[in-house]
Image (cartoon, rainbow, N blue to C red; front, side, top):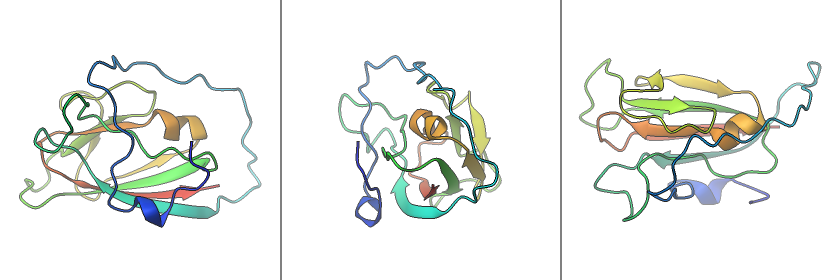
Length: 144
């Protein structure tokens, strides 16, 4: 895993998932605690476009994870619609347990949709897919 995920990842796709990967393999939670009196602090960010059937490398899955980071404990994700996306449509879906979303299954994202990940496990297990085969932009802010 990378020690630092930052500006060098802007516009760079996260790690690829083999097309033969069955998904549905959540990473176990270690039972750690969250200190309620510690305010999260932004440490880095990244931007990337979702894969489409035209842009996914051969033998890789159109479902995408986030970049690997060993320091981040929380993240905020904002989805921005690609040009040509239908207004007010569901443009992407995600799961945070390692399961692979499909265009029909998963938590819904519309243009400008925001989701907060509150643990390192959620960041590691996050998976997202486009619903309309457009390269929507994913903006991620990571926190300690």
